[in-house]
Amino acid sequence: MKKKWGILFVLFLGLAALWGAVSKSQGQVEQTNLKIGVITYKSNDTFVESIVTAMEQKARQMEQETGIRITLDLSSAQESQRTQNSQVERYLSLGYDVICVNLVDRTDANTVVDLATSAQVPVIFFNREPVKEDLTRSDAIYYVGTRAEETGRAQGELAAEAFLDGRIEDKNQDGILQYVMLEGEMGHQDAIIRTEESVQVLKESGIATQLLASAVGNWERSQGAALMEQWLNQQLPIELVLSNNDDMALGALDALQKADVTAPVIGIDGTEEGKEAVEDGGLLATVDCNGQAQGEAIFSLAAALAQGEAIPSQWEVEEDHYLWVSIDKMTDE
Image (cartoon, rainbow, N blue to C red; front, top):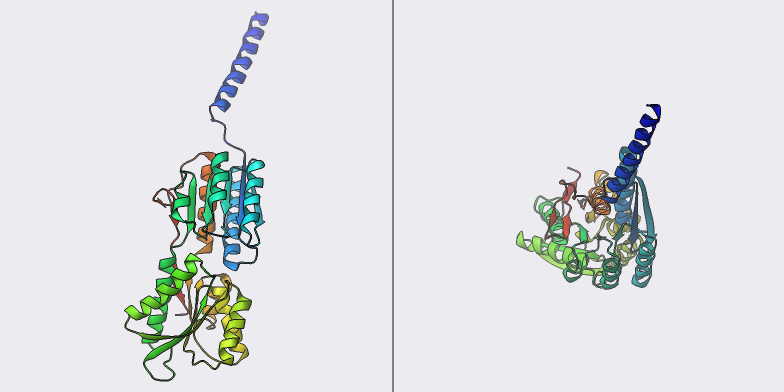
């Protein structure tokens, strides 16, 4: 009898092992390691850094809650599309589950898409939107960001409201709002749209405007400061400074304060330092593009794609490829 029970026990163990193997082959065992590659266009963009930081926080949270080991590997292309293409190729060769790319050149996503599609690995572009033709080449390509038109119009609304209620002074009493424009990057879609839409809203509000000067500051605080210093040396009658992002706006503020000149400055992005400057009364306002939410959305989407799961319901994907994050207007009021 003991021998019989021993044989039955061995058979039971064998069947259990076989069931475990079948379950695993059918994908019923959870993935215990996620590898996500993240490549930014350069390493010193404040807003992009806030997005990546939020991704890292979300990854650590998921590890603690699920026990899944997450590799979130960060690289910077240092403004070289060729370098970025090589970094994508490296991540794919190492078997990464998802690649997140902050494009150097939004018009040149072909190589990234080709590499990822051939390897059957999802790609999430973020912050710098590729052209639609590249996004729609595969069902596993996505973009996460804010709508440039919305951010530009929000900035214009902030400026119009401030001019009409007297917070922006018509210094020469000519009924015209004289302004300067700090543009983010030559040929960059967001820079072009933010510039055009902000001024369009002012015109729609019945405000006559005069552009005194505009220049490209490449999203950088130091260049924003240098351009503002140049305009101050030209003694331009500046009544408003519009900036495509907060870093350049803060640079303009640095130059204004150094010259002991007062002029309202409005930015876009809602970086931590930008929001602090609004609260302190340095910047008149900013448009908060919610870097925290963008980072959380990118990571949530990446984790779902890596595990073959449905995209979390809190994030709505439009046109099968776009995940738009909402914005907020911020003033000190």
